Amino acid sequence: MSELPVEPLSRRDRARADTVREIKRTARNVLVDQGVDGLALRAVAREMGMTAPALYRYFSSREDLVENVVADLYDELVAVIEAARDDARPATAPVQLLACSRAFRHWATTHHPEFGLLFGSAGDGVVPGHGEPGHEEGPAELAAARFGTVFAVLVAQIYTERGFPIPADDEIEPPLQEQLRAWCLKFPVPLPLGVMQVFLSCWIRLYGLVCMEVFGHLKFAVDDAGPMFEAELHGLAHVLGVADAYAELERA
Image 1 (spheres, helix red, strand yellow):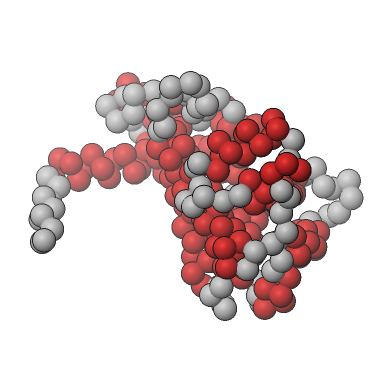
Image 2 (spheres, rainbow, N blue to C red):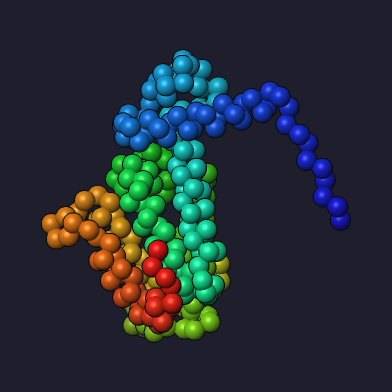
């Protein structure tokens, strides 16, 4: 069956799309320069030579603008880690997972304000309704899910292809079992609860270390967190039974 032709955008629609992109680009620049607290519609409008009320023709509120900026940032991060995954050689799931992990750290350490908006306390409360019962997922949450899926798919592939040690269900505390079971429903393929626990433990180590580095919480011990990150990444490779992949992946 042939695909239906896509109707070209009208000149007005193209102009609107260009303005929306410029607003989001300007909002990101304000974020980098002034932080989340300075990311007000008035500040964005001033940078663009517009009035604040004029921005409401494109975004209904500051929260709406911030959510769209957050979604764009997640999409940018996803593109970075997917490129690292696709460029990894050999193109195996273990090597790709390690390459994605390094790409995640590199983006985080070179985009401090953006990382703070996505993952740190600076972004608390900027996406309205997040986590509330019955809340419909918006563009930021959907983009965040795409980010998590990149890592989830690779871990699932490693387990199904090679396996790695996991705890039995009865070795996991019942309250944790319940939460892991709910989380498992969001994965692309059904996995044992032990896989979920190991994956979560690995992510806590990886993400926790990157957060501590970005926010300067490792300076009491190390000035350069790179070697510590590599040591942890090597350790995680052992946990997942893919230490051989760590040796295969050339240092970036």
